[in-house]
Image (cartoon, rainbow, N blue to C red):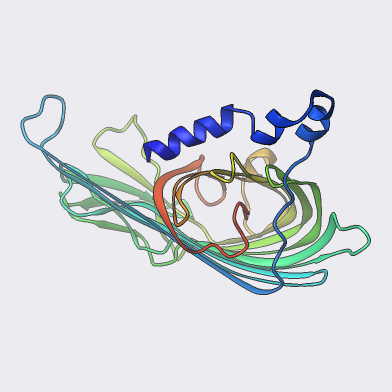
Length: 346
């Protein structure tokens, strides 16, 4: 690991052998050129990678540390199938990210992060203008595991339903209180539009998309914690609502691999400008904008293993107030990287 990190620093900071050996007159031309991108495979191209994470600690009588056992178990699975033939491309992706944690003072395992996402998209790239394309596809996002609230001591709850009615309940100490069902909330998206690849280098690939999108949100009547600090001793829960929304969407994606492919990165942003919503709301228009930000960084340790960090930030005010932020650091073991390294689908 240390050798890989040292090599990474050396590769990033030192000039390559070609630049060092080239005559001064050819230096500018040499540094402007990049290694050609690998030739894309045609037909069906599968890919699969599995990331695993495990942490364990136990303490007793340590100053400033609560007594007990802390443990984290995590799994990230990425799978896909690409089909390419001429200007046609059909891409299907599967992403599962789940972690469960055990913290001191809480007896059961609790959910740390939870995401399942399936995307299937067709794109046609115009032969005469290869940078332009049209696309259409669907995306399904949800949570794979049931959600619950666990408290160290007996706690009073105040629940607010979608229709504004409220009621109280009591959650026992160390007893999971159900909040969401399996695959809830579930978001089904359909989109179509046009794309532009502004930059197509191995070290930096930048693309933009603009199109129409509609999504349906299915919550199964689940609740989300929205605690008010002004009411100590009481935890507030609000019920999520089902709704359908349609509008325009803008996307930008930047991906690349640098330092002799040791370092890969992905940056993506999606903004939806709603035209119509199936439910009435008093939210201002700027709060109805749906925003999704994604970032990822991958450091290759071996040809079959890498250390990966991912950040996901989401705002859907009609679903739940405020920003949703998820960070994940994991060791990823690649079973079959196919032809899709460094590609992002935010």
